Image (cartoon, rainbow, N blue to C red; front, side, top):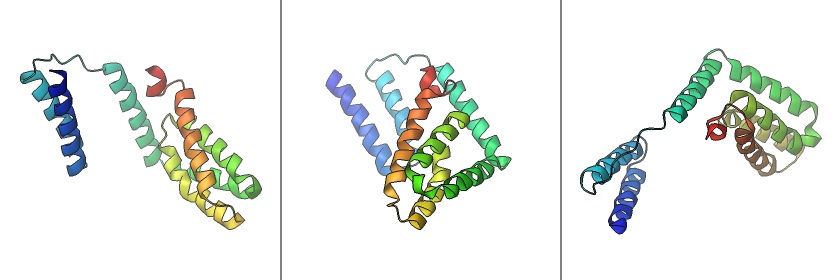
Length: 153
């Protein structure tokens, strides 16, 4: 029975990945329906705490975006990085770390990547190094943020 359940999960993932976008979620719902109806598995209760935390983070990030807060933060980060271009690898990771802790989501790092790339190119540093370490620092900040969904788990 386990092999059939595993096959259902893998087929749903393959179909969802192949179709992409929203269909990945739809394939997950279809997978759950097949497992519940045909395999007799009882679905558990949804993780409401996680869903509410994630919703609050998304709403806060959306409000930050609408209020042009992200643009302001990116401008501040750009001033910090341009003031000390020799230390781009260290400063970029620290800025991403602090921004992620304050914003409670790692998506803030995506707004900083173009700035990091431009400053590193201007200083002659290979942009892959500060960008990659910034993404890693952002992921580490998610686990350090006391109100992120990863920490609540």
